[in-house]
Image 1 (cartoon, rainbow, N blue to C red):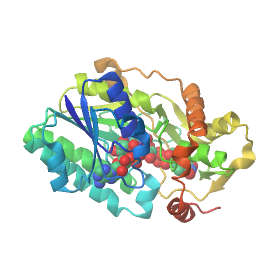
Image 2: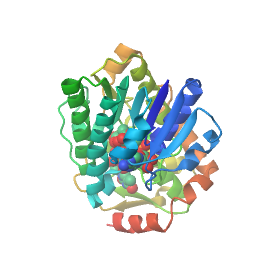
Image 3: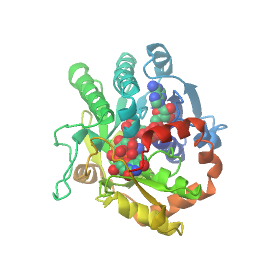
Image 4: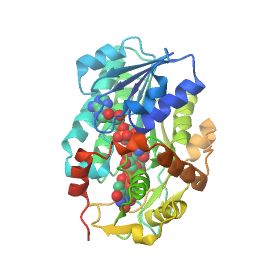
Length: 336
Ligand code: NAD
Ligand code: DAU
């Protein structure tokens, strides 16, 4: 089987390629990635000599290179996206070009190429925000109510994917997943930023009151869920992925501080994210019941392993915190 993985040089995409070639070593994987600031081939260095893996540098919003990459492909798994909420607030335009226009160009090429399946990797952020005092969780029936430019662009991409199923019978599936953490995450997201900042002797910037809640999932559990959807998922359907692991940011930060032996003097409260969604939580009953998915990883243990990974792989992340990153950091973080 030939699989086209878009955005395979990013955090989840690179974990997915490792996962896939370990569990399906006979398949051929093409990684199609633009190599934006978030794309990093170092994450896939160990696969360079694997004859079942190849890389194409390309942009999903460029129909010519997408058409070429799609030739002979059986399955598309679309991870390629601008993925960081804060950057979508600083500059929404690339989020529309990649997440919306790029997805439509991929869908068109997949349709023309008659692929067997097009899987779209999406997010729980399309559902908007839950309140802290409710026990509600997002599920496949929750109405879309995206709040950030990132979430709105992912919502638009989901709608396009569904539309290509209903209108053109393109065999699609969609997953809407909660926050991931683990190795190879660009050091701009809460957990990877917190760990790497501490390892550099810096503080952890905490938005607002620190009581925002996310449902954190270890990245390999996400990869396994996508594998199950590809294997057994019903065409045209959406599956929500999450682990009932909704924890306030400040508690996660305290766990990381403890693991690395630091105290709360390393916490710095900073200006809040505009339009900050208060709480995300997922009800993953459907994927558990219909496809038999279960998360394998315990949060505390996986978090400790993740801290160790960043401690042991400074070569991987230190060079990502370059001058460009510093400029972004200065623009993004304003001390209260
Ligand atoms: P990431 O930012 O780490 O990686 C994105 C990858 O896409 C990078 O390698 C980048 O170079 C590539 N890319 C960006 N624009 C491109 C373009 N125009 N053409 C080709 N490649 C392009 O993102 P991630 O955290 O790995 O997220 C992957 C996907 O999963 C995204 O679609 C995101 O919306 C979704 N998702 C992420 C999370 C999370 O917690 N990180 C949770 C749920 C869903
Ligand atoms: O829910 C899934 C989504 O999770 C994905 O679709 C996105 O691609 C991914 O980036 C992530 O979005 P979040 O905005 O939830 O993740 P982030 O790591 O940016 O922030 C997590 C929480 O931590 C959120 O409440 C904001 C807060 N935060 C984040 C950063 C970067 C801070 O307090 N300080 C920070 O410096």
